[in-house]
Image 1 (cartoon, rainbow, N blue to C red):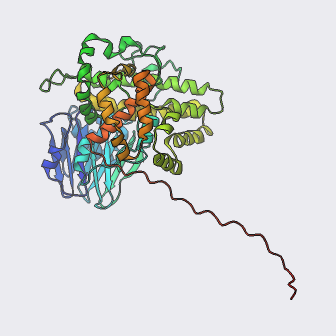
Image 2 (image 1 turned 120 degrees about the horizontal axis):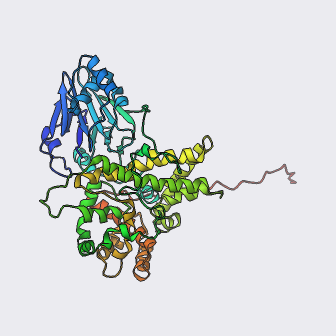
Image 3 (image 1 turned 120 degrees about the vertical axis):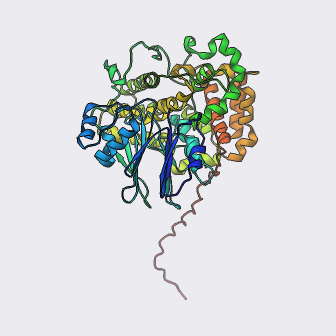
Length: 523
């Protein structure tokens, strides 16, 4: 996936942008810069004070009406030069240019014809993540399509967003545009951000006509997803979806003898996997697929991929899983159906999360409110106005799919990796005495490490590990995996943790004094 990055509100030297880390070298990267701004990308174009860079696994979907509008304004542009097309679209439509674009992309445009203005845009599905950070002190906006590149542009080391651990264990990722890094956010799907010098970015939600949508559960119209029924990556209807579901061994990468022999290499692959993803990954399928499809050696060429196919595969898996969750919630007669739906999203169940958190972190969440309560409250308010099916389908499509399936696809696409959603099932085989990941997990979840962060109860985690090593199960192994990936992610990115501070003890109100009546005092 071609990447973009840049800064607005400060002078950035070209070597800083060229040196920002990425999944592989991009010798064709161009740097466009002016006073107080700089953009970089493999697809870039500049003319008459307007500079544009474009990221995406494929190309823009060029529609005749868009070309006609551009050419009608006296701006002929070659259809295959998509950066020039982007720049011309901005010249034609201004900050609203993205309403007329289709495809998987992230775009950045600077209009320096007057006072410079930066415009960022994410595609309607959120297929290409665009991360950004607003420094309120320096009044600088930094952005990139990859987290390592963005962090390299920031003046301070990364810090954990304190509610992030609970968000990750509840939904698999932070929602609402947040990430697990303090101050680093991701532009929501179908959103344009406009930033003027000295002002924080303004986010504008777009609703272009013809935006692809995920059909509701049971809908026969699969063409809306660009899917091929029965094609590669389509899970069987019998496949489970929960953390404790039985595996489909036919699709398990470790069921192949070749991959079993390579299982000993898995611990060495984890840092590279998390570096590519930028955030912890609760699905072990990402690792097993990475191990099975990575190049044979460090100098081996990255295999070519078909971006459209890759996105369709991941989209198929995630939306099918979403349909099953929504169908179950719509037909659930229980009063606590919404809590059951939210718990079904979680890599680690509600009761397990509560037991694993430290006393201070539990108190912090009790005072602030946890992620499950926030999601359930928001969805509950929405279902008072619309049907369950409509609310939950929109939630799956607009929030879960971009931060789970599509984000993973975009970041692993550069390595030529496809991640089938049902590959996650057999992590338990790796977490047994003598297993490929056992020693690494013991190190990552050591009592000393957990006591230092203050987020997890080291005693509860020790009991969890002991239970898995004596009575292995997919449910326990999935929980251990999720915790281990969080700790390894913190190590890989040197993420500082502010220990959760318990809420202050409120002083008790003084006891009410009895009402005193008049007394006659005899002298």
